Image 1 (tube, rainbow, N blue to C red):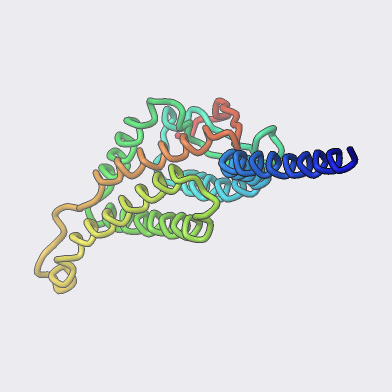
Image 2: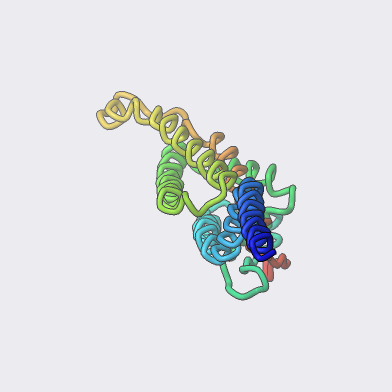
Length: 233
């Protein structure tokens, strides 16, 4: 009788071991799927504030650039946007152009055209050259942010920023056509009859407006739109 009880206990222990082993093996695929999911979810939640700071840096650079542009108009600058991190915890940036107003997209083209149309060709060239340098500086800053923090930025954000930077780089190359007759101008053998690059600014600004709109629409931020206090003209 004791031998039978002992044999049953041994078999029971063996069965428990086998059942536990089978349970472990059957749950490996589930663990492989579930553990990474919760790990990634936890990391995203933990890094949300960190990611928001990196995106904020891009927003700040764009806001600073737009605030200093010479192209201003009562309709273009009728409204401004104040941008904060989610919950209004921290001020991020301010722009005196409401990029959520669809009218600013065609309006910027008219304002740029009117701005240069009032200048002589040589003055327009010098103004455009100085502004191109500011655009190049914006590109360099955005590229630096993306290069350093690419691991912490969404692929869509990187793609949108990269597209803008590529367009600015292409604009820089096209602008160089203005320099082809510099030697002749310096020696008095020719004078500047026109300028390459004014109309190319239209697309760049539309891309900047769209990028800022996309970034401030993310869950990291909230914004406040207000009427401008006074006319710019």
